Length: 64
Image 1 (tube, rainbow, N blue to C red):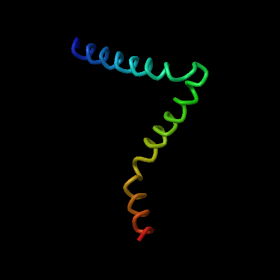
Image 2 (image 1 turned 90 degrees about the vertical axis):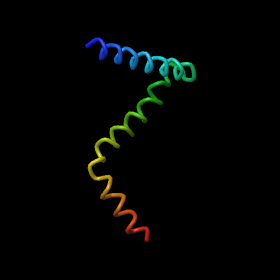
Image 3 (image 1 turned 45 degrees about the vertical axis):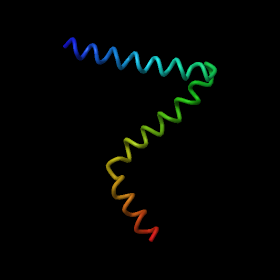
């Protein structure tokens, strides 16, 4: 259990360090304008994952 807590703490530290780096490049009010599009893209990727192989093969067949 301690190992899992250590891994979670390490992951949280990593995330916050990256957030601090990004925070320096963006104004507080603009941070949502950066994060929201990436969140939306990730959500779309997760939703479309089950059909990804079929879509790629269909695209390749139409390209030829």
